[in-house]
Length: 554
Ligand code: ATP
Ligand code: MG
Ligand code: MG
Image (cartoon, rainbow, N blue to C red; front, side, top):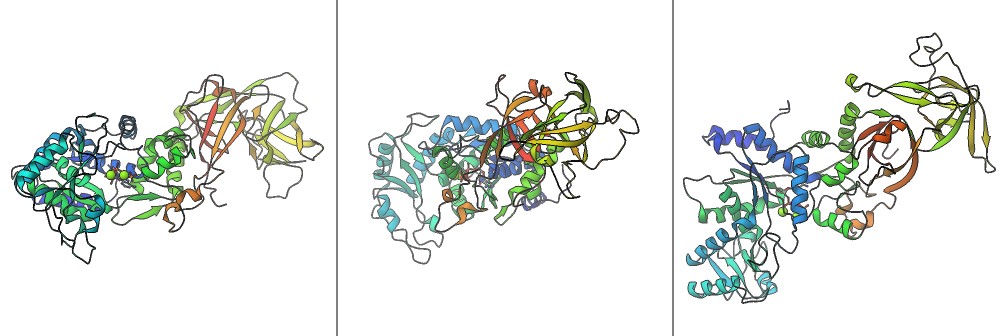
């Protein structure tokens, strides 16, 4: 339990408890539609619902809202389960709206018998035309007064597959002049001749979201059904549907709404993320640039850092866009505590220590993590020829340049103080080699006077003979615009950053040879990197999870 103040949903629940709602009847659910992979927005909903479960010791269901066979797949069900578990949550019951198809059908028959539902045989265009406008009442369908007998027969024939898609729908008979457009005889069922990933071809009529959601909450005895703000107007319908079936001695679910969370420089909508996948802008749902849970996992984000981010932004009543740099801050903060430090050179230039014996190798002690004493030490090989970063050397530089310059000194991390004496250039003037001398008495940790001498800069390095080449994937924002899907006359796809992935070859210290897929490291002075899932024993591949500090826009 964190020390944060209660969010407004918790206030609502506390009030219900104070008014006598039995604590043991609290139950929540997270209700994804399995039509894509979960994204960072869903993480808010997951942490909210499962967080309530933990706070009130109440069960939380994982409910698949699977009423549209045209878009839903088992692949998505599996991915969603994996992501929720990875985030660190455990559901009480795994539920499927499709398990309630028979019950929902029976209730629809009941509505018909009570004169509260009818089969409409108009086209969807005609139905839309009669809807009216928010300020103008709609008009009744010519089929609205069909007899109960005829409605029952037609509905059963719909279910039996006697009709084509679009020929008929079942509608609730509510009020065509309601000020709430959703109450104007909403559709309960449509015909879809499509196989469902769980019920296969058992059904060719499928219930609509509104008809399904509240009744599913009721069947599962969910006490508080939390959804995003766009469903606020649906609450009246949710309640109307519940009124038709609720028993007095059962829990009556309560819908409450919270604000959708948006993240800058990306899109959080499964439909839009699907477009990125289908148009090959990314390599898949789990591309490390995607704001999906699986993409973030592959990139090296930790469940702790995502949960901490979600907790930091909290639960709101109004929508806004959260800057992605806050998420990156949370990732960095956690990785700083847990990631072992290693040395890697990503843009190498050769450095030769001319007074170091040729052929000699020394193994230097290096601390794995100054933030974690239990992380211990390792040995890194030091020799006459090293790689350092190109931009850590300049022939000449002013006094503010604390890296290496001709005539200047730096310390090599875990090693010696060196002095740059000369350098070699190619025909274009690029530096191809730096010649240095070292002070043999200055070895880090040796306790000598020379070792304690202060020099301004410390550089990371790797020994040329021991370095392992590795592919390094550097990621940038997927979109060049902070809110790519907020532009009236431009499509979000127009803002895709064409340079969001750069692949380079770097050199890493030999201790990384045994690293496993998913392992996370801090490349000292560079950032956090993890082993990419495409890596093989023959080929190391790293993803840059996040840089060491926020350099966006700098
Ligand atoms: P998408 O448009 O990405 O498909 P959705 O709301 O249709 O989003 P669902 O699978 O229905 O996706 O979402 C499951 C739950 O997660 C719902 O309760 C939904 O309100 C919530 N949710 C989805 N996106 C966000 C978001 N960006 N912020 C907070 N909660 C969200
Ligand atoms: Mg939905
Ligand atoms: Mg959706």
